[in-house]
Length: 473
Image (tube, helix red, strand yellow):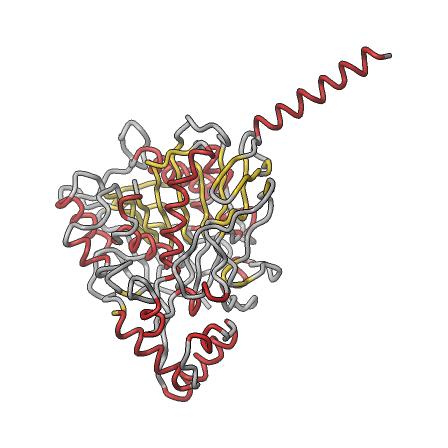
């Protein structure tokens, strides 16, 4: 009876070793971590990895600080908290669309990222990395919303997906003269952008442990996430860390978004704080997020002045608008993909085309333009702002909509385009063949992504077919 027991122990030991090989303990900034296996064979997920210290107490409204070390092995099986925010009304259009869970915790302790990789612990693999930045008007949203659940699809194509969370609203973009006086750089605000830059640096410093290439990082985002991509590509603090960039529904080359100057932002916020007798940093840091939200609403009602919390031109993180810096040829000199949806909030055709043509003039790297034209099935909302997210992440399983085989084909094609771009700087893959050609003066065309009946269509067109803006509520 001893031999069978002995052999059983050997089998168990071999199984444990095999499990350890496929899901190894990694060492990153702060300590050791271990991921969790996913339904996709070979893909390991790491959820809730801290990339900076919690921005609480005295660290509120300061640049992200180094990770607080931990002891032992942290099992990365739970998402970190989402940033403090006012969530969508569940009965609103987007509240129903995203089906965001009411159980998601929203706190100021929100500087975490998530990684999906097919090569955990394989430091020589040098796989391309895609860093995702969620949208939400710099006020709301989080990295692991259901419509962005595409980590396994990206990793199964050999691209490591990293989702990042950042400070939002009054916690992420609050400027004040006292904060600038306290700062070693003499500025305030842009904390959410600085969080994103810190996450980008974390990827550069740690992604080899996950099988990634720190010299091949694509950043991509939608709406405010696209604006964030533009800011990171324009910032002297981050642009040299970027290998490629995808801008989704964030506009292009334009003079309509001049940006908030730091002095103006500081004055506006100081007036609001003075209105409520909050004149010291101690007073302001003692306020809860909800108190800040209520004060803002009350201040607007009483004074008819609305305080906006969004990126500012501070001559530190941002030295000018994205368009101005692009015209000066000082943005990241990398391949770009840029586009929007056919029923987006406004017609971005000319702004996107102008950006691509400017890149053709300034750079040898290509710029690819697209229009997502699929009117989503199930209602009359069309190809509304953010509707492409279900397709970019192949996340139909989380949606109520009656998608058909054409939608499935379109989504698979789009994930292929996005991951090919992360790998090669070309959505077509390594060959560079059609169907998607760069937008140039000789051929200023967009890739139009659509469904005809139950068949996906991928068509190049110089007039992509914007159908009129809407922002469903």
